Picture (cartoon, rainbow, N blue to C red):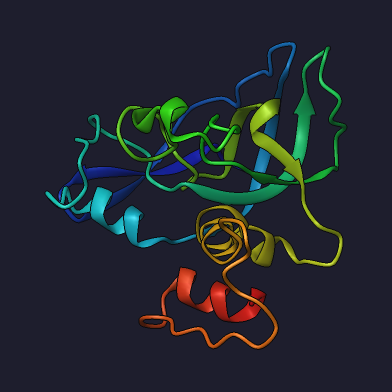
Length: 183
């Protein structure tokens, strides 16, 4: 299958381009065949060059922050194997401490190409095993909408939300729908 990606040609216009031959993974990288992506409101802001998004996208940026897929190839030091199902974390900010967050390193938002493509070369630290109980389409929604909703509902001590809580969500977007499902 061709190594293609949707790239931002101009504000609000995506074009499908051929990226050439498939890249070869480095020692701790994996080549992933993307099977599903999740469209987030942020992705629309980036593609539209909307001033509500605080960073400017590089020329020909591949948008998209969430994806799930299958490992096609792996580097010599990687723990992943061909055929493994994975879900991609859109950034390398794993601590959750906002002081360590580097905003412009999130996939598909400024200078880092994102997930709207058939194949991705990924640092293995950004990849997590897709839950066996989920389809790849479901798993692709975990990080941006799912983790945001989970974090809001489970923040603080004592826990603010419990079995008898009433939760009001605004709208029918990804975070609201996830909040309803995980509460």
